[in-house]
Image (cartoon, rainbow, N blue to C red; front, side):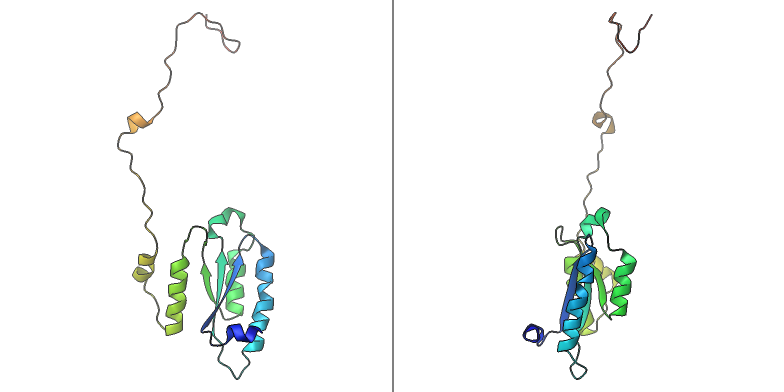
Length: 148
């Protein structure tokens, strides 16, 4: 049945969750299925390994080295995205399309796809700082400190 899905494919994308080691391990089953469908007599489509949830870098369990080794060992291109934030999704597809066509994207072409992060510049720092209360000369005694 999988051969019907793979028929005519120019590329197959293997996407896994960087916060879940098992998701990368389970790709092995899919990779075996692809190799069964595309025997030696058929032309193997482009294979791409895509790590998802790049926005959860603090929760990463799949190390970058493991990702790169897996991609290299299985003749896959390597990509990293965040579907939640959209980070590098368009760039990933453009790179894969370029690889299919034998075109290498230049650095400037890759940068035009990336969104520009806008930062607000605060001009009046004095107004932005919180004011400190002035010391009072009250005769109240504090349980912490007594002024004599």
